[in-house]
Amino acid sequence: MTSSAIANIDVSWQMNGATANAAFDLMPGVTALIGPSGAGKTTLARILCGLKVDASGSIVFNGETLLDTTNSPPLFVKARNIGLVMQDPALFPTMTVKANILLACALSAAELDVILAITDTASLLGRMPATLSGGEARRVAIVRAMAARPALLILDEPMNGLDPKRRREIMALVRSLAHASDTPVLLITHQLEEMLFSADNALLIEAGHILAAGPVETVLSATETQRLLGIDDAGCLLTATVSGREDQLLVADIGGATLYIADDGEPDGATLRLRIMARDIALSPKKLDGISVLNQLQAKVSGINEGPSDVLVNLTLAKPGLTLQSRITKKSCTAMQLAKGDTLFCLIKAVAVKELMSETP
Amino acid sequence: MLTPVEIEALGLSLKVALTATIVTLPFAIATAYWLARSEFRGKIFIDTLIHIPLVVPPVVVGYILLISLAPTGGLGYWLENIGLSPAFKWQGAAIASGVMAFPLMVRSIRQAFEAESTAYSDVALTLRLSRWTKFRRISLPLAYAGILSGAVLGFARAIGEFGATITFAANIPGLTQTLPLALYSAAQAPGGEAAAARLALLCLIPALASLFASEWLYRRTKRRLGASS
Image (tube, rainbow over all chains, first blue to last red; front, side, top):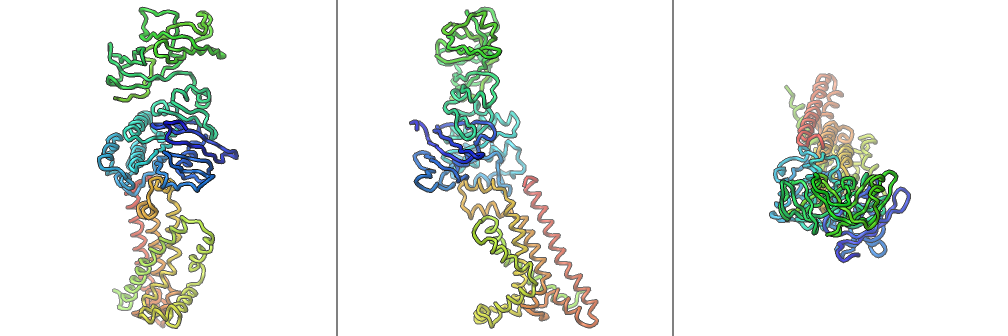
């Protein structure tokens, strides 16, 4: 168990006639449990909560043993204090939103007000669940679960069936709530976008086995992730800090180097998560003047992977030591006579840098 | 206009049926919840026992009540000593009606509890609600329509009860003669056809009124909860 982990989990269960085994450490913040449909995500969540009891192994959470099938009976659901929001918000239909939230509320009025403000649900308190939209119902279900002050909150595909705008709202909300309340969140999803927008760490699961674990950047670059999630192009994640504005563009510091990106109104000092796809990075042997591409970052070729139709070039930025990937044609690779160790300039259009999330200081 | 005998029989029928329904309902709710939520050895036996009044002739139920609760019996002797013997009294008619209505009420209410989504139980557990809170705040309100339906069925069964009542409480005008018993007496009496027809019509009134009230309350609840419920 790593020193910063809050939970150590090693559980096994029967799944489609085979034994599934998920072993991983859970870190603070938002962790995405990502995998294709039928990978065992929901089953694992139910094992963690104690709702599925025919599992073996051990779960140690914050130093407390929730499950240790070799030595003691498992703790009951209520003793585990793990909140669960399922795909079906399951708001109790005979009571108002307020009654739903207050039913198991363990927060002070001030604490609850903070959560209501973050989730923008205060105006819904007097409504009956049947009158809520899908997004509103999900938000209320999350507030209800948070109000019980869980030690860990599991969100099982809370964005399923929502339109893109509502998905973005919930994704931002998950992160804000987790950080504002200091509650670790396990976000179950099969959508790459949800992992990239919301999570600090990720666990890739297939057939009940954890194939990759670690920071989102690490899991994203794992070949299993690209295969399982059908990622059509490589790309990289960068963490940047807004350092100012120039000619209606944001100036983002990525640890010594500067990136110009589209201005979405983020304040100075805000931390951004940026994604740059390999296909959006062109390569040049020298810095070019008089072209439209604003970002020209010096980098060293650290690897060249030839595919059937093109080449994926791995690059290490000279200043911050970050890695980028560029997808170019074989013809370009041959013409440039690329070799490992070459120094190049990565040409990145400002509008090609996608801002996934931002956090104000 | 109703004759004094008819008014008396109607009043007694309503008193007996309402008492039977109100007293039996909590037991029916508890039994239905227990059967819907629990798995245990012998459940099928308990289930069968509860449904016996539905399949045996009502007169058998009345007879069992008579030998159990009559002043000569053990429990009946004790009840007689403390002045609560129900045999041949309107309370006896209410007990007979309640026993006959019980399985119908349990069936209807149990279906409502069983229809509750397991997601609510999962949420209640992860919210760390006590069993009592979960029952009182979630399951009971969700089963409202089923409970209402069970109560109405029970009331209708109680108001039409004949066999068990006449066996256990007898057919004493003004004391235990409910509408069906009055109808039976009228039909047996020479020239009582007209009175019997009037009583038969009278039997319909509380039954129809209860069904109408039930439907109205059901629709009102459905509107309040919305289509999702």
